[in-house]
Image 1 (cartoon, helix red, strand yellow):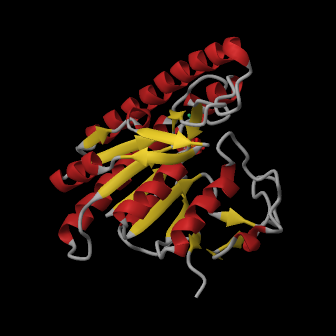
Image 2 (cartoon, rainbow, N blue to C red; image 1 turned 30 degrees about the vertical axis):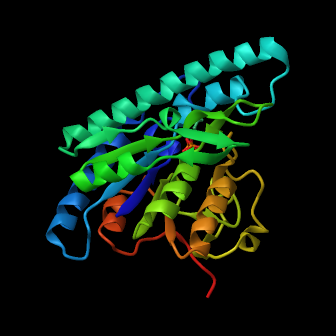
Length: 275
Ligand code: IPE
């Protein structure tokens, strides 16, 4: 089984003020996934199974940040405001998921939408409980479950609600279902020592085994409500420590997702255990 994350910056216009989809990327990537699934069917190296987890981009981050979901609330008025923001965010990310499932279906991929806020509970922003039986059953039946970064209920009384990133979902699912590969499609070639969008001298780190490898990283590199690149790497390092390797690749480069899903080595950062 493989897990593929499609970052919000790939499938949406992340900087947009209103929710905006990136249709070109989405349609191209859906085709690449379809080609890879066809290839996997003909090759005995694959057990045929894919879970897709996508980010929220402009369908989630602006709302979650405006309504400060996940921050302690200050009295009942603030709680009401946050509940309104929760409801709004949940609705927009669900719309995004629905659009993505539709585009996958247009490529004859039998996607099924799985809404994290309907079965995941966090405590202090970390997943406390999520029953994966249903996802397993969908996989076994040959469906492609599609999950996403969402807002969820939190057991910590001072916050009550949290933003759950797609990366944390991957961390949780991978620990329980132990995939052969975890692939993260982002809008950069991988992890750099400096912000590659600002600095020409930024160098790609091809292998990462500890947070120490990031000490020289520019603090401006991709920060958002769920922690940007550093948040992502922390989730992946946890997986690396229990032997599950993952790779961050550039989903904007044509065919990279397809090649990675077919088991080929492509340019990117591999997060692995220190031997
Ligand atoms: C964020 O999910 C979820 C919300 C803001 C509701 P992600 O953290 O996985 O999204 P991207 O990939 O950064 O856009």
